[in-house]
Length: 166
Ligand SMILES: [Zn+2]
Ligand SMILES: [Zn+2]
Picture (cartoon, helix red, strand yellow):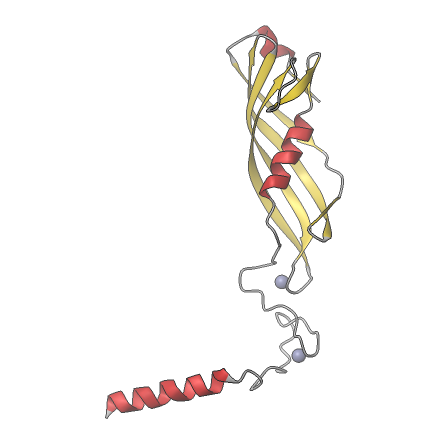
């Protein structure tokens, strides 16, 4: 919980804050994600009976590559902009005394920014569909010649080039 008493007693003043957060492992798009080093930091501004927060959440998401299944970390940096109010509202979070549940707001912001799938790197070669080896670390050669169009494409390029040279 974020202590917002300073913001409420200094209406209109931007009060900087920083707070480490803990998130439980969460099931998302078919796998359980872990979260480490979550830190929210920014500015809170009080008005009568409400506090608006403009901040960013930095967190390391522990996931698995959807192509090669290796463990992969993704460092995320997402905006957490929200309002805590004493009066219930559709777009606000409740203010409980002088405490605001910034953790909930930050987690919801994080979930909305998570990618649909994780990859360990842009050019991950994934698992071989034939032998199941990780093709990043274990080139197996199973697919050599198995993709019909490839050799023909290479041939037509070759012929084309030859024609041009003539
Ligand atoms: Zn991968
Ligand atoms: Zn293979």
